[in-house]
Image 1 (cartoon, rainbow, N blue to C red):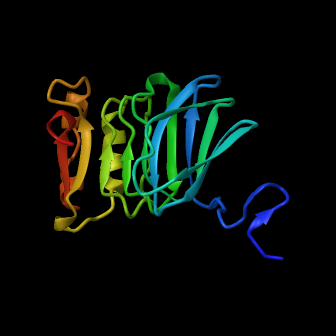
Image 2 (cartoon, one colour):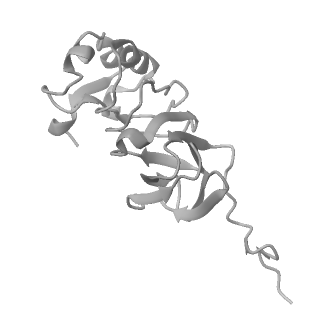
Length: 195
């Protein structure tokens, strides 16, 4: 006989989801939520849960591609070793985003949703943040910039708070203290000028 990692409950026990690392979204129930992500390493299991529904996907170090997942509750949670996360263009279907339980997150793209706040204070590895197109107040923008982690000048850290100079939030953002970001070696850029 040979010994393997398969168990009777069906599955490869060597591919266990890291349930202690997760991202939580506040979403519109009974809608489709588009997300894209990548993981720390190849063959990483990622579990997506909403209400009584869940699915486990396998991710690697490349983006998996934008996929719509069903929301069966007002909360959707993505468990696993995700290091880049993209939930852009969900409009009013995403009203909250909590990344505080994923401290190794490097890239966060949450543009064009309905976020009114964003706490990234525990994301010490973050070096890319695109949050333009959300209805932030000046206070919310200042809070985001104050919670950006300090980077080295060679890290090329990028923060995109506005799409362009004609962005509806331009006056709101211009009332902030952007030096809170630049002092930590973050470039504050318009999204339509960058990548």
